[in-house]
Image 1 (cartoon, helix red, strand yellow):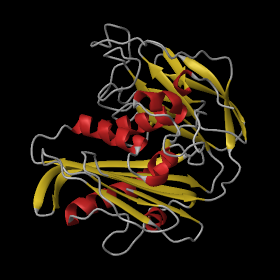
Image 2 (cartoon, one colour):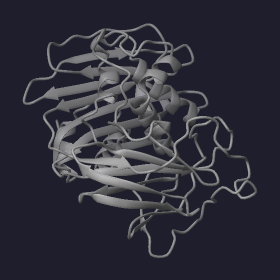
Image 3 (spheres, one colour):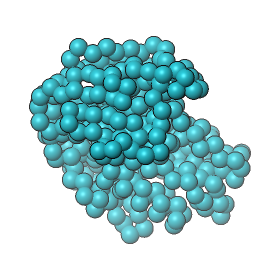
Image 4 (tube, one colour):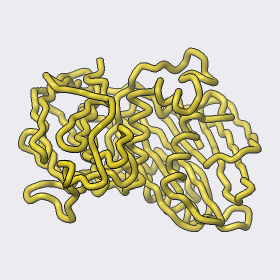
Length: 370
């Protein structure tokens, strides 16, 4: 489902509901500014929702890497990270560290897929067999878009809404009290200049494949079959968003009298009033050697340090730093691999991943973005 709003304009609703032969039921709603219509699609697809509010954003800080190496080919890894020299998860955070924004393994997986699509939209489209501007000729390009950083307040807004939809058996941007996504983001304490929401649910009366379900939700959101204007893909690739909140909640969801074992997912995209630029990434071991982060590969409670600020990665290996002062910083990992990062006004978030022994990958191998 997609919801979008510019300024104070009114919404438009598009809805797709599909019941599969396996008794899994997906559906989509899309709200963008304009007119309202409803339609259905006779094929299997996970449910999606999304909301985007577009406004001018304030000048932001720029991130520029100085003298670092990048790579995008095969990455080191193995089933035993310790034997291969990779970092190892810990049950407790390092002394003196502060925790990174929390994310489950499924939520970090979703974040990594979103940022893969943003940084490499052309290859993401090719992965799913479409042109980047399929359905919206000339409106989308393969130009990289900066990664989005996980935000705790946005994740709180996402989690409360996902839990509420499961608990009360409804699927919509507005809750049963009429609160909009923008109301919920504000209530979480996040003051935004631009914001949006994606919602997805996927359920079955059989065995629920949680990892496969999350991967499929990402694909359907990106491909956006049957949605006029491809609003979900357009929003995912909107470079104005700097942060995101994610929640993936499993539970029973009743639809048309049938109860499904379901994954309810909420994604809150936004940009705040402050001027922070985010240095973010994930620490992982590429155990299956497929040159990308996959479910369960993250290294938990690993030290990541930006100058004097020390953080522990979350349970899935993710981390982020908000930087509000220009200057040159040093990012150091637990392996002692390090890279200088120059922060200036007027630029982009930067994603710096640590893989295996001591490989540092910048923006999925692209290096600094212009």
